[in-house]
Length: 508
Image 1 (spheres, helix red, strand yellow):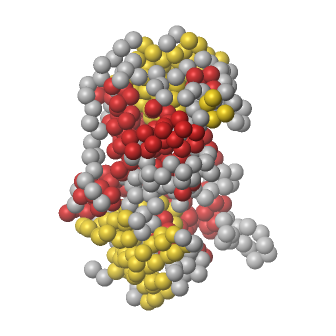
Image 2 (tube, rainbow, N blue to C red):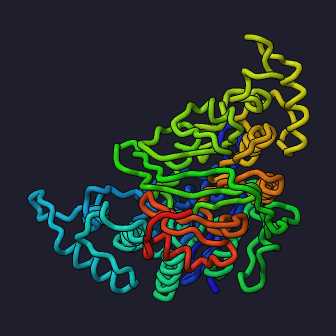
Image 3 (cartoon, helix red, strand yellow):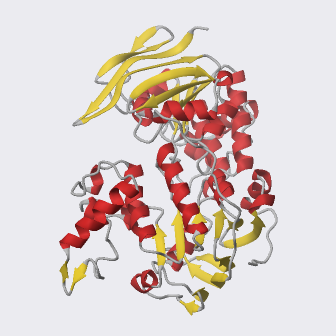
């Protein structure tokens, strides 16, 4: 089948970085073509070249056989190329229709906005592609899955023939993901072509026709989805065999170690973000917290780590009430924290690996002698942890900002796990890291659990929650709506709970 779009020998250089190195990609009419690779493999850069955000250093783009120069996103849109970004570009105070026409507003010739024809076209497109979107609804009042449909409609309204979907399932429930797949299949049946960027290999194998793998800026190959497997794709992405299944022994639970009761807290806008949250975690247990992002998970972690004050409630570790204690006091109670935003709360990017490995513990022995740092102890500490946690490169004097996301995360994992915590709070521990680092981090979390520690795992990745957890708490609108044994949890059941379908009182 002839390609509708070809990207030939695309190279994109930034100062000191070769982001794309002679990459080739072809897209056929009516296909879903997945683009996969580790973080930093060059996926987003390649799509930014196609959408006109970047100009290629060399190489060419052919559309329907003709060579193009895409000078900017407007050129791409005019050519029929639309992009749905991972973080939606919507104005929440406007209606769906107003968002869709933004930038190409219809008027009556006298400068007055006339939406009636636009609304008719939006309704028609919504019906044709099974999007089921109300043009008159305010964006702030519709769920995340519906907001994504608005983004797709924005592209279709501008007559897009090619859609680039960048990590489109990152903030969706399992039910919304299935709905998106249905929409994608409807679009391709109508002759549209889709480039689907994701790091979730199961999704790739479920929905795509072909898959192109990038590694370190180069195209490793393109395979037919029906002829490949998760294991093969992972090896193509990483360059070595990867264990994809979390290997763990049956849990050996001890006494209750962590107790949270009737926890209430407000968010940054003063609205109730945690509403009577209660749970317990035993020795040797991982309690996973599932939920669409923005349902109180961030505030829960911040309260438990001393980064946010609670309005009321109880938080005890081994009987000691730590509610509203300082972050330092909580750390001294042997609570380790892997934060969801490693740059904001986990690292000082302009400090060395060595310095970052003692952050939060720098004032204690063996790293401090009175008011002075003990540089010999710091060096010995770094020389031990860097190989043990496979931090690369193995030069302790390198600044943290020069490392990949996976290696930055390994610094935090090494620092927090090595200090002998009794309670580990791991929030999005594998966000933005590659498959190899995910495998490593999962092993280390299981090790903590097997040593009798209590672990609270917060993750937007449902597969991570289901494979690591012993029990799973589901959060919706600041409440725990249910706590399930992980063995009994299914994606469908969790997805319904994540959408708030069976709310009841919290219980541990």
